[in-house]
Image (cartoon, rainbow, N blue to C red):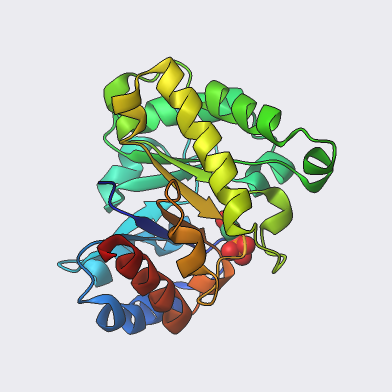
Length: 256
Ligand code: PEP
């Protein structure tokens, strides 16, 4: 049984004060949730204060990106060890906004995923096709390319503790989520080639979450799909009540 994971991607939002205020509102709303891993991913400047605010609770901390080197002349970058140091357990890697605006490639995703594992951080590797790629019937090929190259060289133990986020680019921030069937189809495809590369047993343990306009009113149907193990949530995670409702939908899906 895979524990669902709900991750809030705050993107480029929230000052330190706003970030702490959001987790202060969120924590009591999800304090009773025991069967879902809950993660929030603030901007780098908010990590220290949010880590402090989350101490002792059931919400864990993630970052939105990482560099692969430990230290050195890499102005502007943050290393995996530094993220661990500040209290992160997770890091989002290869988000489509980073691929689109910051030249992220499958190769850099792969380097970051390996570096994350080397420092005990769980990488959340984002993959997904654009609208044009979907309309040209390329969804399977694009997702396969993103996943296979992103995880290249990861051991079976590492892939089991990797989270894959299927995020169709056309669904991110648009209000047009994939249907549960569309999500399930791609998630099943990902699991089937993980099974070929590793084994059915390994593939059955990997969590594949869906992201793209997940809201309180569509979360339950998406997460109820057999290969959908949670959600990567952008917009709806910036407000405590809507994020808490998505977490609770995942908890119910797990218990049913
Ligand atoms: C995201 O940023 O990963 C995302 C899925 O955003 P939204 O929920 O706003 O579509």
